[in-house]
Length: 597
Figure 1 (tube, helix red, strand yellow):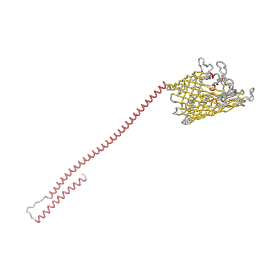
Figure 2 (cartoon, helix red, strand yellow):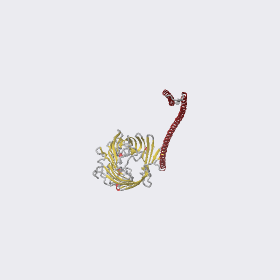
Figure 3 (cartoon, one colour):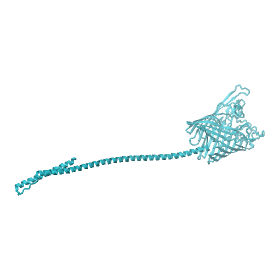
Figure 4 (cartoon, one colour):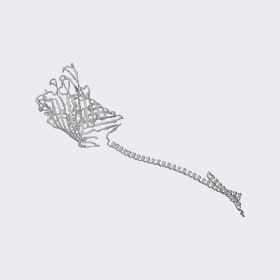
């Protein structure tokens, strides 16, 4: 029994005993008082003490039973309470387990959701990768198919070979004054006004300018290697003629190799366009920009050479370039030619040179330095040429005593630009070379040097210039207008007895047509031996592309040229305001070309 229940039972027992005792006491008191006051006849006796005790015991037993019942009830209630507590604990444990299971389930669900999301992402990525892979495979398949069926280049052991630049040409030329040349015009050979050839026109058809080209490219980690070979049929063999089978020989135009390093340096060597030739990008081989003419001699005033060269160049940020080259030299003499000096000799068969051409003794190669800039508008150039002339001088024509070598340094300064206008539909260009002894770099191949009385070399003052307007109205049309010329100055030596452009030259016969020397020997006027002063040319032409695409290019060209060749004046009466002779010519050329893609 717990303490509350014991306290309650004790309280009930005490109250019962107190009540019984109080009742017994009251009865005695009343009886005693009654005895003294009255003397009843009959006296009624109450229960005795024993009976009261017995009653009290009975009550106590009864109360004890009740207490026992209460204790039993309390015990049962405690048992039920304990069971309820156990059930509550079990329920709480079950709830905790359920909560844990729910948490675990939530974690599992969250993990499954994440896994499903990751799986979906992976599936999406896989789909995307698969789609990209399919596209790439299709693209690669198309590229492989194109490379097999329509290759842009051939591959050989890691080297790419391309015939781009090759073309087949059918060209014609008509001149109202004959030059005796093919489609290339000998500018200093424009016939004088009263020469036999100037009285006859000429027409020639030719396929000789057709060209074969082959370029090889190979790439390493830090350098690009490339080489280029270009040839045509404008060479002439001993048996070449136009009688029946026009059999002309192959001619080497270009043959060079180049190494371009990632650092910006590049080195090239072989037969190539001179560094003095204008380029379209930096100083790179293969980017030379030539007049758009059909004539393979290009244009009077065009500065160029195509010869051996060794070149080193540096690219600074694809905006500025600096380069230098050492190139093959050749001296072109003009004016009086004394017999007491030797400048060179004709080619000898054992040396593999042409026995009908002259080759100068060169002390050193021509040296050229050049800078180019592309600041964002156009292409700009500045260059210089150094030349080293060399001959053997003999003071006496009858003895070699006292002979010595004469060495002269000369050179010139040149430059030019080409800029676009009207959204690159118009291009303007101007280029020139000014100096002494640099005549051979002009397209007319005028003289470089003359001699004084003793035979010493005297460089001639020369100037070449070319202006160009190019129009590109549509992708099919290319229209060009050129005006240029090459000029060589007088150089008077020994009181007008030696030099170039002498005032004393007999020009009295320049206005008289001579008698020819035979069927194939037209003559020029006698007593008309003045030196060339200048050659000027104006050209207008166009190219029209019938087709330009993956199968190559098929185009047609038409060109008109006007030539004016002037001699320095001399003695014998003027033929023009300056007293010199002249020759003029008009020329029409056509070309049909197919270019390999």
